[in-house]
Each structure stands twice: as C-alpha cells, then as structure tokens.
Length: 92
Image 1 (cartoon, one colour):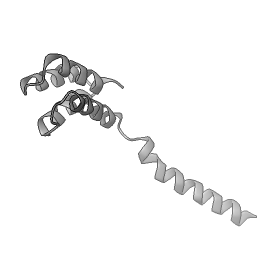
Image 2: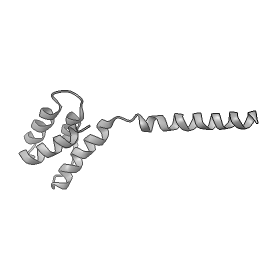
Image 3: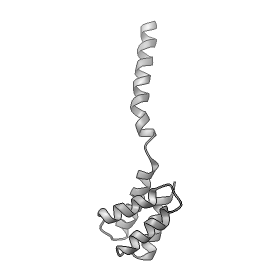
Image 4: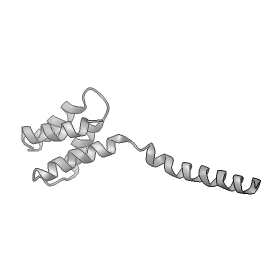
C-alpha cells in the first residue's frame, strides 16, 4: 500500500512540475499577441516593427501604452488602429 501512495505522490509531483511553467507563463505574451492580432484583423502586415511596438505595450509600466501607440503611429498605423491595438496589449 505504501508503494501505491508513493507512486501516486511521485506522479502528482511530476505533473505539478510539468504544469508549473504553463501556469506561470507571462501574461504579456498573450497581450502582445492580442495587439498583433488586432492589427492583423485591421489589415496590417505584422512584422518586426509591429511586434516590437506591441511588446512595448505589453510591458507593465506607465509608459507602456504611449510607447506602443507612438511606435505604431510612427510606422504608419492609423491613430484609431494603434489605439485599439495598444489597449489590447495593456489589458491584463
């Protein structure tokens, strides 16, 4: 009986160790993806400049939204589309 309990314990610990990185993944990744998806849906080709701007927006600091917004506007994204995308990036 002790062997079964030990095996279940080892299995549970292994599962928890495997699941931890998934549960602890940075939420910024998803938000950055939301920003990029918003721009893709608006008809923009997502490339390195848009990825970098969306990454700025996904940072957790007071300059995240303005940094994202101005980076997108400077590469030719319309003001409204940049605003929507950066808002998507800053949502937590």
